[in-house]
Image (cartoon, rainbow, N blue to C red; front, side):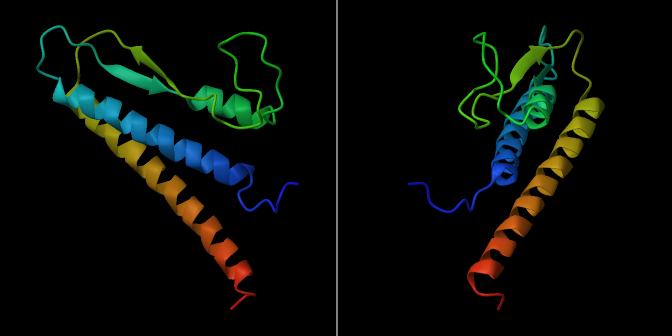
Length: 127
């Protein structure tokens, strides 16, 4: 028998976003660290489209190919895809992407913290 659902879909999505933002931060940091490496091409972690599809599709999709999302009702199938871009690393652009990713990461953490605070408030009978 399933228990009460404290961790709803939005909390699972926020957890997944935080996880993917951490991975993206590592990829961007790697680009900056290798900016002076001859022949190195910048990489990017792409996951926004997969996440948007999962959210808009209600995560009740049927997987007919291996690259489709997980059908277990969770976001576990979304892992992001590292793609290589053409050209050299532009450190200024990478720093902007790093800052943007950090802001989006912190926004997701704040939203998750607010949901947890609300859950705590409810479990303490509103005190």
